[in-house]
Length: 587
Image (cartoon, rainbow, N blue to C red):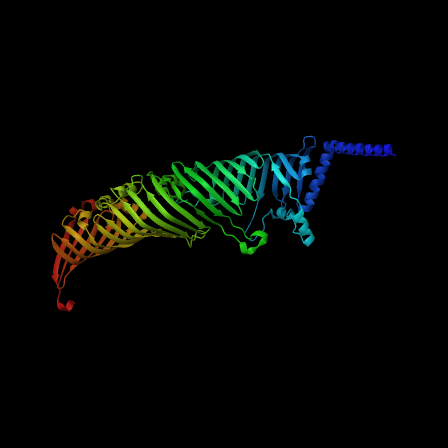
């Protein structure tokens, strides 16, 4: 009896082994593999309700790998959605018995995807894929308990390589030239080359606007190289050490030479530290930063835990060369090669930004600035508002003149600026749509000046008011017979290049083009004290003409004057002087 049982067991084991060997041999034959391929594509097409095709597959159980050739999936409108030229996976099948998925190698080549989302309220053409493979929610308590007790698979991917990956999403193109990652125990080294391109099929925003930079999210063409170390050993946490990252867009003028940082992702938050950003000569170091990523619902689908995007940095320290950002954002800075040292902190969300503890200075400390600032309305240009509060600004030993010379603009009244001597300022700067406004108090070696002026970007005028209680006007304008004056003025200066260019081509000249209306409350001229003077000045760029009136109790003094160069005010011409008494009835 025992012999009979042993024989049955022996024959049973032999039969199982034979069946396994037969299955292995059959799976390694092309005919069986093609039949499996046809069956798999039919099942996928039925589940997705879209056309799915696979040219061929290659299964090798001996080497424990699977290769797939020529996968193509159409969307539900019969448009090409995804094609993969070749993909393969090599894994340890025996590890599955221990509830582990060990992938020795995973590679993909020639994957191209065309993703479309026509509008905000319209579904994307790939949504059906997400819906088809979305796991269903457990309906009964038994199903929920079973899901909790079910042991999760442990994944271990040892090597990943990808090449020629192209994803088009509406008007944006993402091209991954190459990606390689390798490691073990969920620690990886990775390198990648990425190209991002967008084209909204409209002219660039700076077309016909030479004063505007090339930065335009509708026309990106950025090439990036990335090298990092990944640590995925902790559950629900991703740690990345960015060893090297650079990005270049030669047309736009973006040239980021180096980005280094340590990044930790946990609970929809990015925690960054030891950050360095280098662009040409500009170098910025940030000790830490936190970025809260948006999510519609919290754990368990709790809508009360809805999270908005937000960020906050530690102290930012570095040296900035404004010339580095000129092509992308401000061509007017193309010659600004003066290094500026800065420190600040930043915080904000998707519509606001706040700058605190801002400190800017030149290396020799001849220029120092302390300020805070806020930006609101980032999402909509109609509500955009930038405001900086300058708590202290000091410019000494001619640094103001040197800064102005960094700009490729016509230099006017530089001698008068030099005559002001050391300058300090406290006030505000604001940008609202097409208008920039400056206001505050300017303290100089020649006296204090309160001002409020604004640049109208649409009409191209500078308008404003200024007042002084005791300004050494004669010292500033090189008119030695004038003593301190108390005055207030309103002015309007034309800054339109087409208008001013046409006027200068016609008349020439070195003067600003515009007009001034001023009231001199009190002043001294050749030792004589004068009060209640009013004057108007109009300049066409070549000649400035004005009229001055002195209003006494019973008399009026008046004359006309003209000049052609603010650096030679002593050569001012006085014409048509007059004097008259007023009768009582004139009062």
